[in-house]
Length: 380
Ligand code: BGC
Image (tube, rainbow, N blue to C red; front, side, top):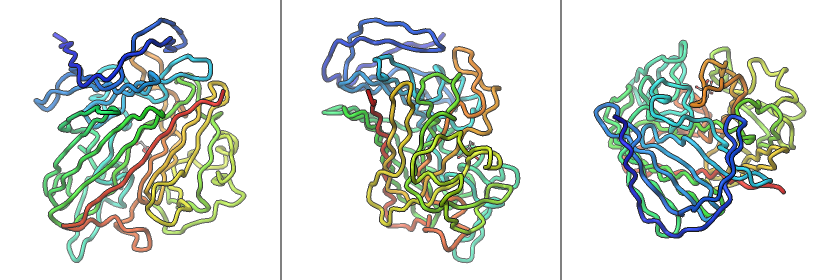
């Protein structure tokens, strides 16, 4: 029998809100009491471990749901310019949707976001072999990456809702060296920012590149493609790839071509001249590891705008090219090609094999620390 426990954790305050929800084109409106803070509910079981679904609510009534299975953001419900609420990310209502292995919807990715060529890399003179789970290459941490494990979780909500997820990846897990301790802290602020802070340490030299793989669709309805969304990325260069989507090593200027998002463009405007669609790492113009605004996504009909801030040197812009309608939402709607897009902040793909790229090596005694913020707002 499905467990339906709901645990209340540090509820801060209550307010009355008009909530309209737009799921699968049906819009319902109701007056609801919202409680800011964080609640925890049972979400199922896997690997003999209990899985929970946390709901983070801020003073505006925005709600982000996150499960400790894969650290997955399952929904992010917020109002559009007319006050209608819907989720701006792709996700499912139940754990079974995720156990069926959708393509990393909303998940934490590790140990290595994106690809490592032929699943091999060397540290000093030791060669490490990883799973080749994406044709000839290694993708997103292997067969059982951080997106498919159950994380330890703890919460706090003194002023804002905070969820801390922790995972210890054992030495040689998925072929990577070192016992790696990872903490990921999700915070939902009253300014509609979802802040993701990653911290990690290792006891042996290793490589690390953590990210979050949320698919955004600012219309809040997967039947609309994202091709009409507007995008800017603060990147004068990108990393061209070979047929297996491994960077060639070149940092190529975007100027004047379909990769030029230094000024605003619709995603669909030039996508036909990009073979396979966008699935590329952009070399951000920022020159240090401070937290900077690097991309802005917006959608005219809902007025929604999503700004991305990161400390990372790159962002993978993936236009949902491999979505093909075979995966359905919990309400049974097919998720078609370009039904969502990802802006995965990261170090560059295949960095362990590309000495000219910023390093992804982590040494014992070093602290891996990086922050990404997705900030949602509405242009009325
Ligand atoms: C990759 C794509 C991949 C997608 C889902 C993205 O980060 O770059 O090639 O298909 O993740 O797996």
